[in-house]
Image (cartoon, rainbow, N blue to C red; front, side, top):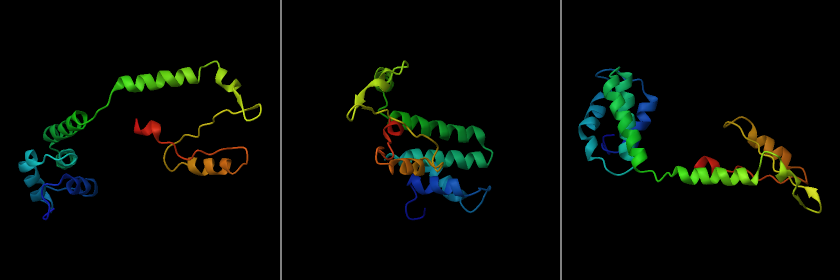
Length: 154
């Protein structure tokens, strides 16, 4: 923090690891960051800096000030996002057409007349989904696609 006082990531990392105290070890660094935060202009540093200051203020029970930092961080995220809900709606409508409720898609035959029905293994991180997929993929008639991250990146 002494070397790069206006980079947001080190502050964000510290804010997730340290229990702050008034006039504590990191106070002067965070106060300096607050005074100079408008000088940080390269994304994602201002976002990280605002989240760090929000956490810092929250721990010190300065909730109103902390909320302003959190709000600004989220505002910066939105302003730098090219998210378009219409793209997601089109994606979901397309999937609904491919996989209708009546199960018609299950009747498509490939592989010499054998039905090829996709099965999706979903779960939270570190819940055993990768191991389950690997065990099933060990069967000669099952193809394991690995982790598909398309939905999480949308």
